[in-house]
Amino acid sequence: MNSSAAPELLDTAPATPLERTLVAAFLHHVPDLVYFKDTASRYIAVSKSKARRHGREHPADLVGLSDRDFFSKQHADRARAEEEAIMRTGVPTVGLVEKVLWADGRETWVRTTKLPLQDEHGDVIGTFGLTQDYTETKRAEDALEKTRKELFDASHVAGMAEVATGVLHNVGNVLNSLNVSSTLLATGLRQSKAESLGKLSALLVEHASDLGNFITNDPKGRRIPEFIASLAVHAIEERNRLLAEVDSLQKNVDHIREIVVMQQAFATMVGVVEPLNSIELMEDSLRMNAGALVRHDVRVVRDFTPVSPLHGERGKVLQILVNLIRNAKYAADEGDSTDKVITLRIAPGAPGRVLLSVQDNGIGIAPENLTRIFAHGFTTRKEGHGFGLHSSANAAIEMKGTLAVHTAGIGHGATFTLDLPAHDPSAPPPKRP
Image (cartoon, rainbow, N blue to C red; front, side):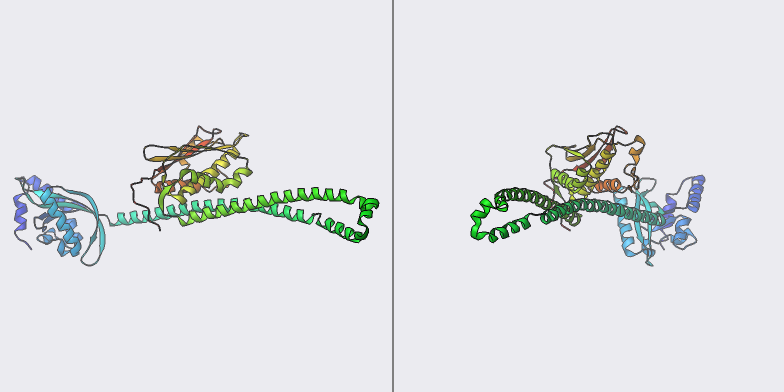
């Protein structure tokens, strides 16, 4: 131990007995770990709590020792470098939370404040500090963060599942249309007059030797021109009707293909932040809700202002917009207006921002629900589960954006606005997963 260290502290000790008593009482009873070190980072005085922390009963047992006697070389070297910087610059370290590696392999966490130690002339003669055990708090924080992340991930998955459910629902509606078209085609083919054409052909072959006389004088023969004309009209009408159904069937097949392609893009582009076209995103989101909008007779109004490409993840933006459009459809359907309208807007926001809005003229939102509208599990729909808007708000935050709502109250519709950063052309290109 360094026997010359203790007198150095005595030289700078309080001048009056009362001050000495106060310092002694403080070091004896303070629960936090208090220590004073010389310029070589050796302890010259410590609190009783600090001594017990190192398995010593008396504070004097630590005098002359250093961090190297208790902690790993890595931690001791880092502490020494930090204290040298404090003595050199006079700048303290305040409230630093750090991991401590002990010589025996233990790991703990502390919150430390260190300051320069000066004598009566203002000369720096070492450092002193106060350390609080932060281990249990850090464990609680880590557990809380893990729980928060799990909840966040669950909400995100729920949001993606909601989009997938909407996609499947929309595909189901298109499949119903396909089924109707295929049924009409089958019925039309079964009711075709092709069989009558075969009977006519057989009749003509039967009277091939006196065909002119048969058509001119025979009652059945005289009806053949009229029958052929009627058959031609029917065949043309049947062809046009079946072609219309085939055209409808092809369009529905293309619609399903578009939905599947968009869903595949949604699933495979997770984590890729890139410049995105706002109009394409709006139109894709509309297509993924098209069946429900048509079925519920909801009119869509587009109000698109030219804007810079936005900066975000395609899948997350689609997740948000699909949720907002679907919710707007429900709100418009539940409102009192006979003309159910959803208005989609694209507009520039604050400098470097892009705004995507979905407005409905539906049922509106009660004022008391505005503060809870994005809360996990909150919903005003009987069959809702409260994941859609919550996961959408989280997805917006992940992209450094916000999702906000405005309404004049019940019966006055609502507007949800997604505020996202615009793409910076000088930024490095995105990394593909």
